[in-house]
Amino acid sequence: MVSQAVKSCTPRLRADATRNRELIVAAAQEAFIEFGADAPLDEIARRAGIGNATLYRHFPDRRELIRSVVLAVLAKMAAEADTILNEAPDAFTALEGVVHGAVDWKVGALCPLLSEWMDLAEPDILAARDRLDTVVASVIDRAQAEGSLRNDVGPGDIMLIAAQIARPLPGASLVDHQYFVHRHLQLVLDGLRAPQRSVLPGRPSTLEDLRERCAATRAQQS
Image (cartoon, rainbow, N blue to C red; front, side, top):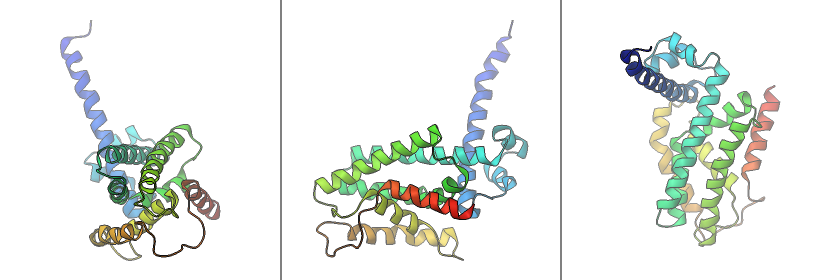
């Protein structure tokens, strides 16, 4: 018979393991943004406040850790965007919240992680991307339907803007860059309001265009 003491310890052990995993994923996201996918695993363990053995117990290889970071960020972004869409007073306010949120989640750092390390056709990755794509497209469709967003832009245009603005200039620290990010992003968002004052070259960019760009980057690097 299992003793009562052992039974009472089991939920605590599971809770500790879950908490450690969350700490590792959060620390890894931060380190990957700062150093790229080759961020030292020892540094990730240090930032998470756990030992190296604990990190390797949860994530035996770098690819699995990167996969967990990507899935966590995509899921949190989709959930946050869905909440914003349901609570914002109008569609353009929702769009502003989603785009600023994408910058806070450092969406620009996801493209190299996806293109270099992930199988984009993997069911979990595909499902997470599709959920985020659906919410983002809904925000943009509503803003264009209400007449507040210019009608010659697509989801790919807007998410690429957010990704590019979120990435610091070469030699600039992430902390220094963050001071300007939301200021510059708001300038761009104001330029997206309807009625548009200029004719854009090319065609609206889709989220599929972004995926193809990531795939092209991966092919060039392989």
